[in-house]
Image 1 (cartoon, rainbow, N blue to C red):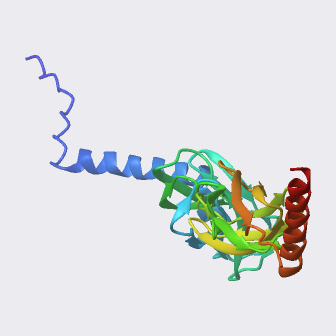
Image 2 (spheres, one colour):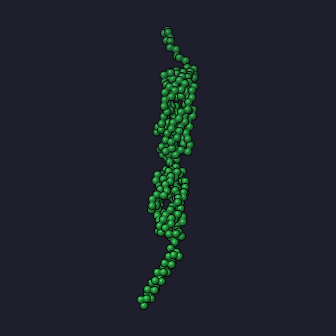
Image 3 (cartoon, rainbow, N blue to C red):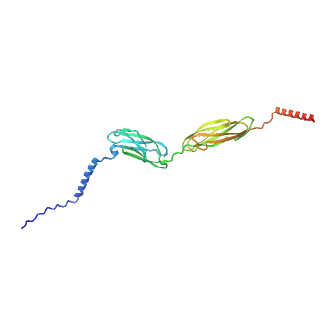
Length: 278
């Protein structure tokens, strides 16, 4: 009788759920190994935190303003040679000088910068330091219109004098009004020159959209029309000059009593001579 051949034992099926647990264990071991060799986030490594970022509101193009940034060292060790970089979008606006922070120390730093870029749009300003950053969005309006001072009006009072004695001086008043058509402060020098020379030199300082009127005395002599010219220089637009005119006329001369006697005597002599010739 041939002995029965023994068959190798068949492995029993693995209990349900053991294979997923084995996979999880392998994955956990891999993650632990990776975390031991991969660097963490820069901010966590440095311990530097930006606690506050102050950006002024109501910004306009070409404004030069101050941005304040509060930086804190949340790490366990001192940090040396820190800087804060200020950006508008991807454009660097400025940065601080290097500074140090002890562990747990906080400091506010300031950056003065001029706003540029596209007017009438939102700008994203960002403060960056040691791998950490903080952003603030602000609307940036168009730039203020520059100062543009013009002569708004020039009036002469009275426009004419017809009642002065012969060879006397006529006095007129000139009122000059200057106006700043811009939105920023401006300065202008006013000069008024008449037929006999300059009789007014004055300085105007005007805020945006401001007007100022001033009076000047104008003395003239001679029976005729007199003219002058007002001119401004400085932060000026157009018109920057304007003419003025005034009429001065003397009273008609009336002969005095002595002159009338002389005239009468001359007339009498003429009559007598004529009579004799007849």
